[in-house]
Each structure stands twice: as structure tokens, then as C-alpha cells.
Length: 510
Image (cartoon, rainbow, N blue to C red; front, side, top):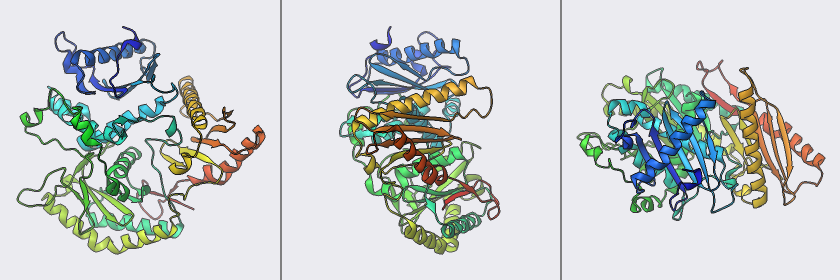
């Protein structure tokens, strides 16, 4: 069966998750399917897509045992692969015949798969651990289907899924966007974090501080920071709470949230929690955010506090979120340190309010005074994206990016794909630990705009200049000025170990 023979649904995309350790016996093939979108496709079609994907993985491993295929390009489809966990694969098949073949960024699609997996692990633990807990697969399916359905609802525009495309080439999924603050405000944030840790009564608690949709500080590992930051921006920040969404009902009505194990949540006597469900978080009178997603405490109307899993230690942590105006504070408290469940956790929240309320008000006030608004990081004449070590990114405001011509974005999207290929070649050909390659490419788009990519010392800069002079020298000089003034200094991270004992803590300051 050829690659082009796989039919896609009307949404133009298929997404599946399967386990290579399952369903290897004849007649048991369905056991390997953990998730499939759209779920109303016949099982024969689902097995056809998964069978083809499994064959491609097996074939490419012959030539590259340590790194199987990441993407297969067919005439009408792109097949994007991601091994989320050992032998558990996520595959996205995207129809590219309806729009320009350059419309979808393959690397961006892989980051969508990574993101939804990291969010799932944040709230449910690893997929493999769930499969080991309940070997029939019913438990994990009953959680995956609603979880990914809720996640995909964020990509709905009307009744159509709008996947990342060339329009999004000046943004970077899987990174955090940080607020640059003054030194005085940074000291206030440091003091606040110390008070939060003391109020929790345990040295193993963690915190994130956000202002608007930007990260101010974190004491978590990079991976856990990205996962929790992503969730906060999606569902917890003031912008997320006020925007909501109404598109999820369309997915539900069209039977996408359906599986042959739909009743197994009752059979296994477990409540399927949906942390990505829209409009389920609200701010209480005490400033702490609450949700009915996890139910209520026995014998009271108190909402159950969600529990998340840390990737680095797999430790279970209570997620307590506090919000004052534009300031959102997330405090993670070890479940093992709270003896009486919600009652014990309420005492921790009370301690936080008594000890840190004034400091939280002061931090919010200082950050608000220094905040330049939605266009704070706009640089006149430039449309840019800066990525620092694939952890922190900064970009032109979306409203400014929307002013770019389609030809400019298409050219930049193609250039980014070339840079990604070059990075992979450099990584594969180098046996050294540090194989960062310095690179600078300037391309003239059809509409006369300059699209530019520069990589240096672990940083990546992508830029569009639509009003630049026609000379390459002028474009190169513009990039140099931007790099010297903004890019390679703007994302300098200061690790403060002298004031705070934990080396995990950082802030960005002028």
C-alpha cells in the first residue's frame, strides 16, 4: 500500500497513539490502538494507518536503530512521528492537498505531539505506568480520548481544525516566554518566593510566578517548567479565564470523543478527570483558583485540589494557584507532606495568605508599573523570533506579525525547515557533546522582503524585513544591529545563587 493511498478524514488530519508492545498476535491487533482521531473512523481504517506507520518505523530502524523516522513526505500527506515513550508512538497524518504544500511546518507539528504528551503526563503520569496499572488498556483509553479532544478544541476555528502552519513561523511551541523586569522588582520576586516556600512548611515545594502570560520566575526543572507554564497559559492566567471557548461542543456532537472503551471509566470505577476542559476554573473569594474538574471533598462543597506529576522525580504534587489582577502564582506542595488531605492543604493556603499577601500585592504593583503592554517587545521595523537554547523564546507581538505578507511568511517557513534539517545533520555528524553550528542565511522572498535566519551559541534568530533596502548589505547590517542591541543580550538569564539557596531559581532583568 502506497503512502498516498491512506485516506484522511474531512478534518484533513489523523492522529493516533499506539503501543508496539501490544497487539502483536493475530486477532489482537486492536489492542495496540490507544487513541485515534477521528474516533468514528472504521477500525479497519485505523488499523491501516497504524499498520503503515508501524511498518515505516520498523523499516527506518534498519538504517538508524537509535533514531527512527521523524517525518515521511508523500504526495498528498505528511506523516509526522514522535516516540513519546519507549515503544509508544504518536503519529499525525496531515492532508496537504487543500492548501499550499508549504502550509504546515513539520517541526511545529512534532512539537504539538510533544506538548500534548507532556500535558497528559503532567496530570496522569506516564502512559506506560497507566498500562502497567491496568493491562487491558481500557484505563488509559478512557483518559486519552477526552484529554486530547479537549486539547484539540484549542485548534478549532469555526468547524475546522487549524493546525500550526506557515502563519505561525514566528512563534515557538514548547518554550516559555519570560517577562524582563528591573532589578528592584527582581529582588521583590526573590523575597516572595522565599516567603512562599516558608509558608508551605516544606523545603521540597516549588513555585512559578507569572505576570499576564509571561513567566517571571520558576524553581522547577526546565521540563516541568515548560509543562506547567503551558498549562497555565492555556487555562489559568487571567487571559485564559476570561477568553474561554465554545468550540468544544462541536467536537463532542460530531462523535469525535468516542471509543470502544467509552464505558470503561464506569467499569473500572474511576473518575475521568479533564484538566483541559474549558471554563472550569474560577477565582475564589480568597484569591485561590478552584475547579470542579476533580470533584468535591467528601462531606463538603470544597473543590478537590488537582494533583500533578513531576517529570524529573515522578513525585505527586498538589497544584495550588493564586491570582491577584495580572499576577498568577502556582505553588506545588508534595502530597506526601500533607497529612489530612484538603483540610491540611487549606492550612497551607491560609499560611500563604497570612505571610505573603502583602508581598504579592507589592510584586503585582511593581510588575504592572514596568509593564509596557502587549507591544512591550515590539521592535520597530522588525518582525522576529528569538529562541534561546530551546527553552526561552521572545517574538514580535501576534498583531504585528499579522501585518506581514503571505509570501514573506511562506519564505520564512521554508527557511526554518532548511535550518532544522541543517541542525539535524550537524547533530548526526558530530560525536562531540557541543556541536552547535553557527549559521546565517539571508533569502530574498518573491515580494522583495528579506527573510533571515541566524544561529549562534545555542541561540536562534529568525527575522522578516519587508521595508528594508534592496541590498543584501543593508539587510545584514539590520540583523547585526538587532542582534547586538536586543537579541543575544535580551534573553540573558541571571541565576541568583547568592540570595536564594536554590540554584533552580531565575529571573530576567535589565
